[in-house]
Image 1 (cartoon, one colour):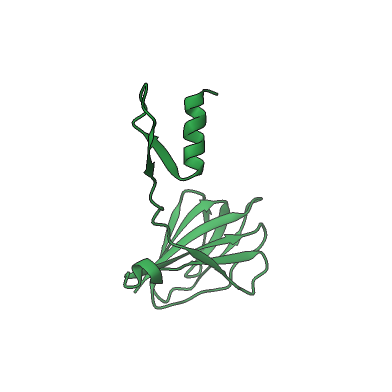
Image 2: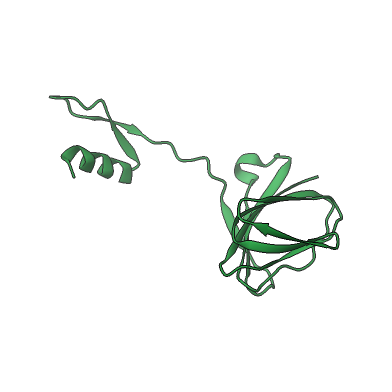
Length: 140
């Protein structure tokens, strides 16, 4: 690894990047701003193999017209039936699910998304051999 690569690696690990490197000049440093990440916190659920992580909007987006979460489901496990007054979209980022929506079963794979109308019953189970991950967004 070159000396320049080591300088960049060290600077990035300190959250700073060298700027203006040139022969005979010392590098100046540009601070990298913190990513505008939305924090998530695990919320306890009483479902074996299911973990729920709620996204905390209060600090940055308290007035946002939507909410979101991420949940994981281990193979062979599933959620309970859910009905609510909001619209909801699930983005499946990992795994394979069997989803029951309004009495009909659907197979859903990573990379697909689902839309649920208000008050329509829906639930899912992990039909695959790996942990499934779903991002949920809902609004009134």
